Length: 316
Image (tube, rainbow, N blue to C red; front, side, top):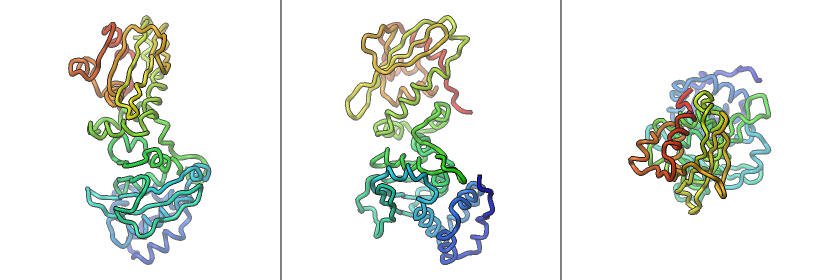
């Protein structure tokens, strides 16, 4: 791992010309290390300056390929716009064109310039994303990052950054820990979650949650359980109904996609965003049934039992 030899504090006394030269020539791994060692408050202090911020954003984007995993970068194609703000005020708007490993800044950019996707977030969060410290998928789920357009292209950009001193990917936005998802959903607005679950990110989120459900089985409570619960998830923009079956038997939980020919004790039908809230403890199953968010066909007691023996903690 590269040692931290760089201190961003000297930028406090620099102007635009010096800052531009610094970001154009600094070692990329040393820069990422220095960003990781700098607090949010210190980054805010620097990025609030009109003579530092444009040089920092332009420099980070122009040299993105130097702190990205080359194989991941080569898979990207399209134009990605970054709208960077502070407290709701747009401060920087930049765009990159990706084409099979080649990357160029888009000149003469304005809000009408055609792009494939727009990523909107705060300045500090943008810097944390490109330094590989924040998971773009979790930021998207939590509403701290907004995506308009090709969500998978945006998240692919968030998955190209490498750990300093290695060729390894820092964070993969498509690999989600359910505990992290539960934490991210703590304060998310319902309308935002609905939009996320209507995007191309939907199957990844649902797939990861169902895949990891058995990891959160309470073995003591499940020791004598014998139940099979089907889930029909609505709200897919394609009109498809996603189907999963969760079985608990002999203290072991298994999950299968699809439900053709399966014997089920009960079937729960709900919107995809409501299932996500249910699975992560943000929707009480009884409340969901009473409000019509969850429709249960079959043995309601067995459906409730499943909720009691699979528990995803809401925070670490």
